[in-house]
Length: 372
Image (tube, rainbow, N blue to C red):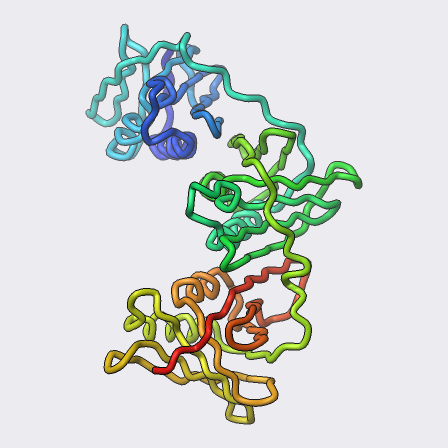
């Protein structure tokens, strides 16, 4: 096998495929990337027991063929290669990689031991690539990190006609994003759970323009876009539905500048040691404001910000500062709207610029305010 291509294109293909490689594996060949050169195309493939990836790109093929090499080592080499054309060729028991006077050799892994990539499930429809990537990032912040509760480490992927719903929760917060979905058939439905870490990696490997084909069956989900094809095994179980939880009824409402609020939360929470809460006191009226406070005894911090507050009177609520920062940072709107039931109750954060075909909602459990 022998092929030539630009260093940037090779590095991009290798890095996208390498995202699915396991950090450590008892099966050495699963640490490998399969390079398949044929008819001026190069396909780079990788897999482990949970996910697979195949990236196809243009290359000048001199001799068609396949070779399996250690993926992370190949990626390290690609990152330090000089800019310009790169030539890769199998010479005996190694793959040589040369470019602008640099030359590397990689030992070849046994190709016969490498398992076949799983097939792509049936395509259910397509979604905008950029919007899908943003949506995954917005809900992933609420996914659990405790591997003893594997279902809560996932993102719910729901398909219902012309709507895709992504949702995640760790029991203390719940993020939901809906976006338009172009189904292959009017009756397309799905309700599955995909690893948040895996889905985030997949979304990052896809381009930010064009359409993504979305595939789902009983055991896996697949995504294909611009020559990149990935699959991931589904998690067992189901995430709780958010419909009733998000029905708050009558609430007080605060609208604030998002960037200023994020900055203030980060600044004030510097003194919030040991997971102590950040307290927000909202005052109504023409000069409405929000007073942010954190700390204990002599180690305290406070900042007041303008806030358009619609409530029966002054209200004080408190939040885990890390959770609040994650929630606010997941929005892209210039302003955010906070719907508040009261101390120790649910609070809903949404974008402050009105609803559209896509919605993003982030529910947080507030905690009882503590005296500063």
